[in-house]
Structure formats: C-alpha cells, structure tokens
Image 1 (cartoon, helix red, strand yellow):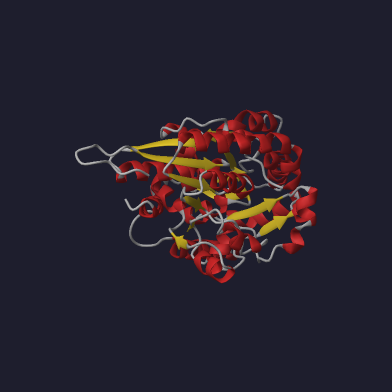
Image 2 (cartoon, rainbow, N blue to C red):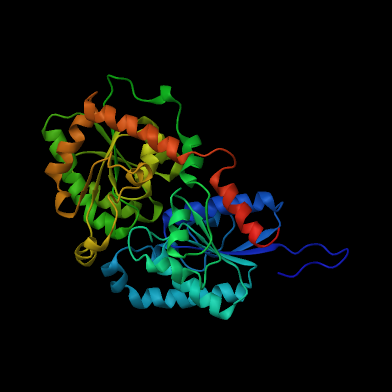
Length: 390
C-alpha cells in the first residue's frame, strides 16, 4: 500500500473480499459497513459475495450461488466449474490490486483462492474471517495456513488456543456476528397470544443440496405432528436464491407453510416462534440466541457420511459447541427421520421439562457468546486495518 506524499489526499483503501455462501455474505456485509465507518467512506471493494455484500457496494465477479456447495459429492459433481471459478477469482483479485484480501469461511473455495493469490501477490496481507474447523478434523490445516494467511478472525472463543496449540496463524476471537442481529428481534409482547396457534419455524438449510435432502423429511415431520393432533402454524424463512425451489416443494404439501424472505422476516419469526425444526449450521446459534427451543436434523451425502468417523467433536450443532454440551438434540443421517423428529419436537410445544431445559441452555449460549465492547464486525474491521497500520 503506497503512502500519499505531502499535501496529497490518501487514496481509498482497496479491500478484496471472498465469500462462499450466504452466511459468509452476511459476515462480509457487516465487515464492509464497519470498514466504511472506520475509514470515513474512503474504501473500495471487489471480490465475490451475495445480495447483502452487493447492497454494500460489491460488484460480485459472479453469482455466489454458483459456489455455495457443501460436502465431497456436491463438490466433486461441480468440480470443473468450481476450479474454473477459483482461477477466475484469483485473476479478479490480482487485477484489482487490493491492499488486503479477506477470505470469509467456505475454506474449500476461499483457501485455494488465497494460496494462489499469495503466489502472485506475495506481499499482500491475507485475513481469514471464520476459522476452518481444525478443532474437529484435518487439524494439519492450521499449520499449513501459515503459508498464506496472516491472521485468523475467530468466531468461537476456544479457537485462538486451538490455533496456538496446532501451530496455526495468529488468531483473535472477535465474537460471533450473530449478536449484531439480535436488534432485529421483535419485542417480547409481539409473541402470539396463548390461544393462537404456536409458530413452528422450519429451517431446511441455505444450500440446494440441503434443501433436496432435508425438505422432504421435514415435510413428513410436520404431517406427523398434525396427524398426532398438534396444532401449529408453519413459517419457513427462505434464502432468496432458493425461494422458488422451496415454494415448488412445499406447495405440494397438505400442510400450509408461510414462506418469508429476508433477515428481518426471519428474525421476526424467531421472536414469535415457539419451537424450530432446523438444519445444522449457523442458524442453530441464531435460534439459541433468540431463545427458541429446537430440534436439529441433518442428512449427509454418502461420502461425507462414510467419513464421519474422523470428526472429533461431540456435536455438529453450533449452539452445543459454544457451551460444550449437547443441550439441543440432533439427529444425523439415519436418525433424521420423520418419526424421530416429530417425537422430539412434540414436547417442546408445551411447558415440559424438555422445553425448560432448552430455554435454560439458550441463556447459557447467550452468556458464552456475548462479549463486552465493540460489536464483532467492528472488532474485525479494527484488526483488518491494524494489519495495514491504519
């Protein structure tokens, strides 16, 4: 980064950001807003992102949906396109000549980009926002990252110690950006009255592969609850690029489902929801922060399922990982069936010991996640600027 001469105006900070899925798009948008505030607007962006980052001024080199895939089979089936997009992204970043590169989560895509950018721009600082799960599997990645990542911005409090133990790059806990969305929750008096049908929030994931595997079994689960006499209203917050796909599927269900769009509508549903049926992912932490009891279901592709034995963690649910306890039930692969999910959901509608235990656990998740001081996006922006001496 060149410094201005005497009397010259400082050139805008040039930041390249690469996100690989909707959750990364949200993180990137928050970071962009914080960087704009801290630089007085003297910043320009380039890279890959989704609708939220585009609203903040990013002209994404190609649609985020093209690379938002998960699992070995999904990746292998689209490998030629993904490889091509990696090289296109590298060319895009190099042509932009940024002052810094921020890769956001999605390590199967963003890390190959960072490695290749480092070869072509060896002096460019690289920040990894959201650590790969080196604490769960493939721990060797931590040490390998030192070759192309200068600093990791962690969203879980235990991650800096993990990177130090494994020989990874410098790592700082900035807090989980989900806390910044709590302001979107409606006031407590906005919850449905006791005599209204309670709201069951249905969250089948943000990737096409998750929708394909989970939406049918979630629909069967709702049907079982209805058949058992359970009264509820189903609300499904959908990501924009999958809305029509979801609508086509649920339109064939015998149970009406209200599909809502956007972050505000999703958090309104969280604030009004009685219970949730969710895919594993960031949304489980969001639900816990909103105080919503949940049941988590997930189905993997065949190859990922076969490799589950190498994962060294007690849970795949983020809310459980934060408190180190399996407080929120999860049913993975064969356990993810309509009968099991419905049986686990049913007692959470009423004031039962199961529901009270989950409510207590959501409080512990909030206490473990909330930290005093600046919001996570502001901390992240401060560290990014700190690497540049600004």
